[in-house]
Image (tube, rainbow over the protein chains, first blue to last red):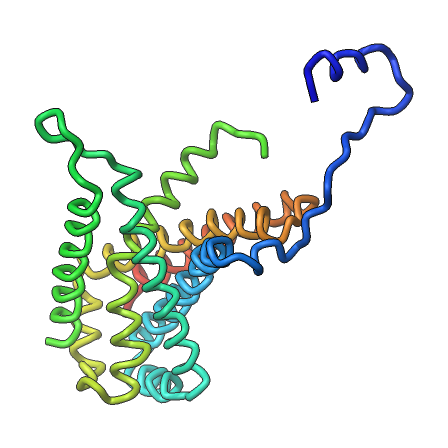
Length: 142
Length: 117
């Protein structure tokens, strides 16, 4: 709509004019892969929150004593929880992949006046991830 | 959605939480959620984990991880509900639920980690 057409409605009208808008389905994101991927990426945040709840419960049991922690460990062997943890891990990995692949666009690094290639920045993130993962696993399991 | 001056602050928390979650959650979730319960690796046992948790650096690490991850969730989930399901009329309720939840979780983490026995 041209602005002159909009401005013409500036004179007094008892009702605000309503522009025509097509209704978008609530499930607009289901039918195209890029949209679905976007929504799955956003939903990964729910599993991030689930991990925090799990971790807080683990800390509470570690603080409460060996019996409580043994119960926690038994509880973690529940098949339902194992499946949920597996699904959560997939979503968290999706978050990791999409986050690192976006990193080159979020932080543009220039060296000697030239932009550092995207692949190098994402690659640096993946390399750092491997190192951090190794360190955390070593500290927990040592 | 109207841009409020507080928005960049929440975006900053979201972004920091995203980094922390990407780097640290997969390994911890894999170990404690799958590998240890399924017996793929030997369980570190109560004693060694309790000692590890007693270290101040571990507590700071866990506090930052829990808190930032929750604010990451809050921001992302809020916009998922807003854009994905288009429930704009519940805007205020959703905002309070998300950031409020993150605040409560942060307080819980602080309480558990500082009052550790």
